[in-house]
Image (cartoon, rainbow, N blue to C red; front, side):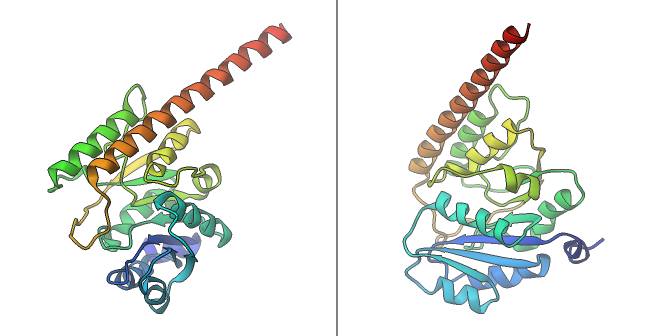
Length: 249
């Protein structure tokens, strides 16, 4: 069954957070539109023509008056998907780092009921990733995986798919890049089924990425923070359960 046929049975929305992406966003919107029912672009306070170009290409555009950061833009993506009745949400970058034609790889496990959250992984199929980027991603992924039975190979990819169950249960609190791992920590804690699908990623000079060292340190700290919070919440829940058993005994 083709992706177009399946999207008639479930409303699939692609959400693209953007900041000054007028050079690329129009092409991304047009290419991704063939696989989904609706494309939403969240313009996170751009100073260029991102919103205008995205709208001309056929996207529903939501504009922030000021730049809120990656997590802030993704919060709006999630809420917009809920407001528009999405049964599946696909998120991808607006700077053409992610290939829209690989979207079906993320979509099929969700439509087939095999997963609640699909990560587009850059490391399932080997290809060249700048060494300094790979090191940072490996550290962050290690911090997410350590001590857990549910492991992934790419905890930082933002090319992802979420079904309605995941949309209803996951909530972003981080404004920075730490939101990406925050969602995975929540998903694992809530027992959501996480799978990975192979994707490629194009790194180019015009893409808007912050200093990878600062980015890696910041996200690593967020991973530790959310892992500790999850552990404390689990401990508190276990303590409450034991106390209740003692009361009813």
